[in-house]
Length: 123
Figure (cartoon, rainbow, N blue to C red):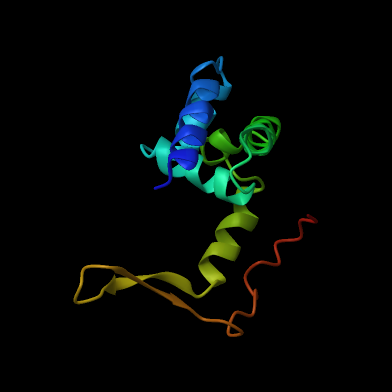
């Protein structure tokens, strides 16, 4: 990797180390143990311009906070009856694993009728 890109990563890393909570926690959720790779993605997206990459990442993190993305799975989906009906009607799911150990999902595109999703609740 070129010296210029290494310097950009270093500068970006310094900026990210200065984050305060809850941005720091949200960033950890985004990078999932690979902060350098995440910084590289944002730097490449902004042609190695550190201020632009930093702004883009901050916009992403702030959007996640505003929309409570990191806690979306902790909240119940209401109405529960509608959720269960849709889940039971959709033809999607893990069907097994490939010879290489990768998960295999089946998607019944166009086959769902949503027939059990009509529980009389408007979304």
